[in-house]
Length: 202
Image 1 (cartoon, one colour):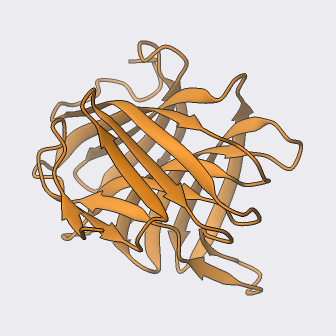
Image 2 (cartoon, one colour):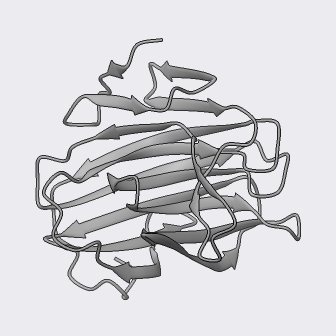
């Protein structure tokens, strides 16, 4: 499998950090990522375990202000299976917005911000196997949102990873407790434009 590839709606080359079990790119603008068993990105704040083996397709945004969004469809099978948007600086400094299968066996919006250890936060349950996820960056601050229709965006998290010159972003699939998971990222859009109000649904 090639280490790098291009995608029509992404302005830069994507490269793999950890190879997926399988990945396909469809002509209609879809990226499919299948991960293997026991794969995740998480640094347990209790110090019990560290995982950094889930595949991520990453690119370096050319703009200091941008939005990256996608419709994420996940073939849930096991607890914590997820498709994610990922923000990566280095192995101990990163964040992810997840569409994840909860221990209650329900799809859910989950965010994780890692600065040495991971700060894990469950948000809201979602009906069905698809949702829109969006990350937003303006200078050194970031925000996560989700949407049911790609029009009205619900606020999830506002945070910073500090001053990061080599920030990369992209797409990942995880299966921490399962035997593998497939997520499809469609309607992918990268836009170099500002959000006027992070909490008003724009």
